[in-house]
Length: 262
Image 1 (cartoon, rainbow, N blue to C red):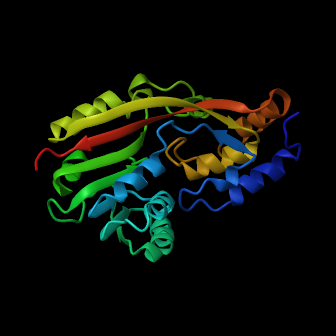
Image 2 (image 1 turned 180 degrees about the horizontal axis):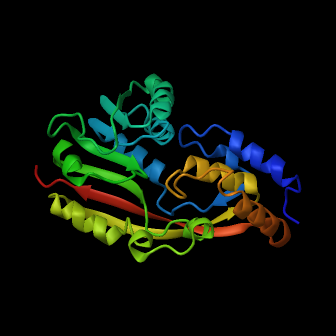
């Protein structure tokens, strides 16, 4: 039996009720696990923030990662730090999290030009951007400035995606490939300093964790609702109860690029 033998209905209702704002994943403790990349992005970002003079965090989510990095960097924090976010509930949460650090959160759609002047920042960061806009990143970096980010890689958590959606075409599975993103960054005028990738084991210990994950990470199974996928959810619940955790693998790559110049 799985570690949580409560009824399917009770577990699904719990997973469907948890708020999804921000990128705080603490609710999953004891219900799902994910190995962490070896490079420790937030800690590495803190070290770079301690040397920066003007920093931008793109698609900051609820501001949790930037807030952690700023606390680690204190008291050596950039005199100017700004974050962007496109989803209104996250804008509100990020503002509450980051205002105590003196960070302004700018509401900006993820596919829109960055609302900043050319060469404003010596450090631009992002954790799991939906899609990096390389020309805009290069534009707002000052010469010699650095883009430092952790990206989601290709076919991430596709064991779960394909459980619900069936086999996906290679152009979908292979999206977000680090080699392709590196080529796009270079085409925008950036120099690749570091680019490395890892696959990380994930385990879902109950169906509530699956439901909450798919509600929170909405691009995994677009249009996901409990009602639309009730048969698959029930079958997966029974599988977890009889066989143990559902195993998947996330993919991540560390990206460091530099705008050439002084």
